[in-house]
Image (cartoon, rainbow, N blue to C red):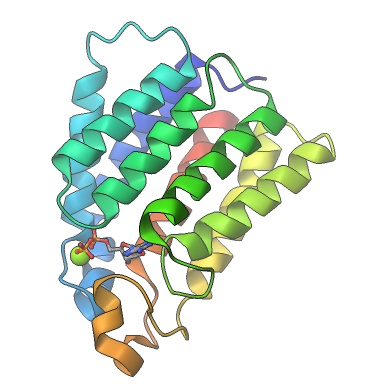
Length: 208
Ligand code: ADP
Ligand code: MG
């Protein structure tokens, strides 16, 4: 199975449903070390992204994800809007046509590069990067050993969830949470948590 236009479309819709379902949890996490808007930012952004797919005649999976990225940039004011927006635009640019697991791994790596280019976060800074980095590694490793799309995506989701969990003891060095200094420790990072949700959703739509 390749990652095609239908799966790209299903992924964006499933993310919109997942962030709506998890809005309260994301908001609670962001209330502890930020300003409590991460859940509503993502709900608003992905709901707009679904609306923006109406009437789009995508010529490949990339067109769906590029449009999604553009929508996130224009609709989400917080730090996460431009970061996820650039990420989806980069993933889209890397997927002109249907992608096998290895090609999707590289597209997801391009998404991570975009997050890092914009946000300048290193692994360990308690950000999106802490979930996305292990997810890309796991996806690549699985794809290189011949895993199917659902298998690779599931490995990536598990790695992202571990990465998000492992942000709990970290001290934030980027974004709003960094203003708290030492007080940012002991809480799971909201952005790493939503990144884990993105990868879990990818696993779910490729498995369905
Ligand atoms: P804001 O911080 O503007 O309120 P959100 O609440 O939507 O935006 O997003 C907060 C999340 O954004 C953080 O939990 C963190 O994971 C992520 N983040 C913030 N700054 C950066 C950065 N420079 N690089 C990567 N991720 C970042
Ligand atoms: Mg916030």
